[in-house]
Image (spheres, rainbow, N blue to C red):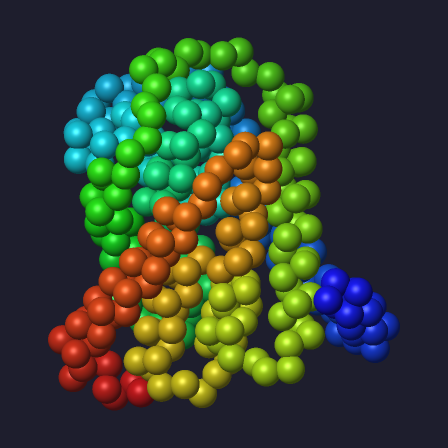
Length: 294
């Protein structure tokens, strides 16, 4: 089976060389123009924050309430708040920082990860010009709410908790830049891989494409002739799943950490079901307003 797959892949690469080249260039442009400038400074900032009392301040204030509600380490509140602003896969970087500093154990990583699949609000607004601002804000807000619901649903998921407190460490700019670039190069490789797979698909549909790579799926929604309500709901579905590309980007950050992602996968299914239900409820409530746009 592997030999057949290798042969077919080699054949496609030879026959579809032009399409693959276009896909690689598109991926690199996406990475250099959008992903690198939005994530790299945050990676440096994240390392800088670790050298201050900022994280401990959040953990000792909001974190105590957060810990009681969701039964997670108090430092998970820092991950959630930062993820609301910067999105994913930056959330994985914040969690990895806590793990590397021995504040959380490996088995708690997936519990925090499952409730922090959030997106940069400005990025969502910029890549969904086909939606009105009301629907954009609804998707951003409801995604935050569903993540909190998932955190509450998973609160009794048993993990071992660390009692270690975060210790400030000296900020090293050179190491921070090196680690950030290494992580972003892995992310670039993942994006190129999934965009190549997308370019070789014979059947194009926003959901199928978006499940592989969310940005391409949203671009297809934007360029499609779908009714407005379906553009709205399909966008919510893609935000719920995140796509295999984001999952692989997250896994690349935890490449040296042994993690069972079962809870994360289950949480995505719950997220998807809740998102569909809430989008439909919103649609029927707003139907008189949305109907003229379909």
